[in-house]
Amino acid sequence: MTDLDEIIADLREREEFPERGGDLSFDAPWQARAFATVVTLYRQGFFEWNEFQARLIEAIESADTADDEDIEDVYYRHWLEAAEQLLYDKGVLRGDVLDRRIGEFESGERDASEFVVGVDHAHTHTHNHDH
Image (tube, rainbow, N blue to C red; front, side, top):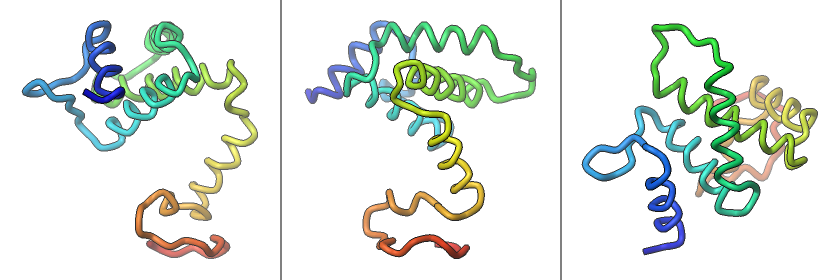
């Protein structure tokens, strides 16, 4: 069993995660990425799990969601909100940096292809094109 498997097994004892046939299951790829991101941040020591749980509870309790929203989407948006707030409070994230990065993605200046294995993006994105 790998270190990550042990962490997920430990978390499964404390939390109910979406599972099908004993394996973690998600309704959309972004939900799996949100889950993996938070678990990775925890694993790398950016926060304790109970700190994240407290922020997640706050996010859920303060939420104003529509009845027709997908429950899994709402849940994982809360995961991201909780992690983001926790990282702000710990000084890991800065609002100006995050806002700038969000703007880069919204404008098309960045498209996350730099994170895709095998895609060469050594050039800067001063132009707008599909990849």
